[in-house]
Length: 255
Image (cartoon, rainbow, N blue to C red; front, side, top):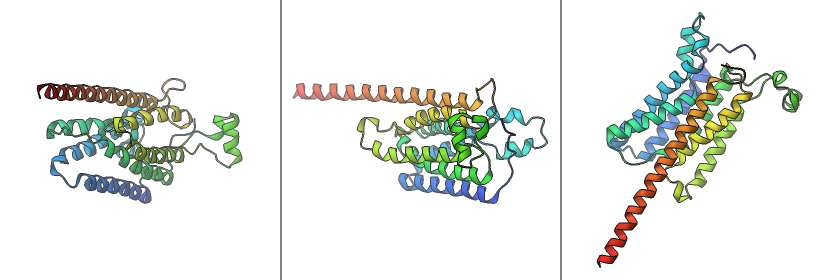
């Protein structure tokens, strides 16, 4: 594995991150029509996402920097999308509980998050972080093909941008699938977790045992939580639909 990148301030990288955050907040404000009842949910996803991204980085890479003079800089700038997703999901659920909200917001998040992450990965390209493994280290037909194209490393941020944009366009088609309404964010967690698990084999990230990276564990956690939330909501919806049909049948028989 190549030498790990030391994070450092980069004005253009920071600007791209701010643009991604602004677009996300603007889309959310527009879709919610500035409904103040949704404020706890918005604060939950922002605070939960931020804390999750930081804690995820500490779990995945923080142990690499404990004895480094640059440890403080790494903790200030280090973050991970997987942790942000998990923290954002927890923040939304907490915000809904505190605000007494029964409405589902996942479909809106599933369309705005890929935009923000795509811009964030552009920031990674500018910053030089989140790199792929060296082409020579990958070897085989893939590594040889990358070297023939002049790529010294696997273009990990670009590959992720393609995934994010692919899911974004898919999410618009999902709006026509009625039984998946309210499940789009769960589908995003599942699909992104699977993508990241596979993609970790090509990313230059620290390993715990042989080929296993901490990010793989976080990715599988995303898949597990997304799947559990999907099943729970589907069962709840099926149960409520059954009750509604029973009431309709009772009213019809009463007449």
